[in-house]
Length: 359
Image (tube, rainbow, N blue to C red):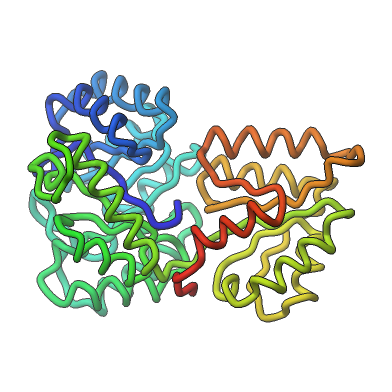
């Protein structure tokens, strides 16, 4: 998701009663990542909310705030039943992953000790970072949900410590209510953050009134903070054989900006890039004809790519044309930036990488 914000239709750690009506205002404001809590509305209404987010082309999030084991397991089962894209929160990762591991949702538990309602993050920063590292090592944990601004201590240092300790994405949650806090989250290396109560209370300066105006204001703040983000981007690089030389030249031209980011490539393209720029972090998939394009498609579908660069040659027929069409369809469906040539790829670099620090 790059660096982005998740709008939570929640107040004081509960889904708001009029969440369905507020969703329409949120969509008018332009937000795509939308979530709700596991408490506040009955399951049937949460299902309608999740379905409406999906129908609007958004990405849905359910955050667990229940503290007892029985309620947390019920929430995990609800996340599977509701078909949400991401399950946030919770403290019993081993038990939750036994429920979620066969479902395509992505799971981001809370690191550290969580107490109370609204939730508070307790313990020394070193203990929280160690907890984060232990959780991130679990196979079916895909990232972390860090309640940083519910921590009574040096929050920027905590965020930086947790982000540095793990290779998986970190989302920061809890009491983010100013541009200064959003910028601090970006500088720490998190992939995104949640806002709920603050947006409903109208605390962000906005050019227009109402909830949609708050959403637009937070999106504008997020766009500015993105330039300060130190989180590594995940970019797919692919080229038809007749365009590999073009991609090689493009990579050499942008080598400095690509350094520190994660480049995911089909086999042949990955070999070319690794030989061209040995200092870049290249993860090679199968060759396109042996399933590499399908592997890329799966990464797009699960939200694990920030952009796709595919140097395509439209002048000659290719056996993989159907795969390219499928990739194009998925980038549209999952709102993933796609560039099919050098000019478009230049714009992606300008938008995604310029002024970002990488890993």
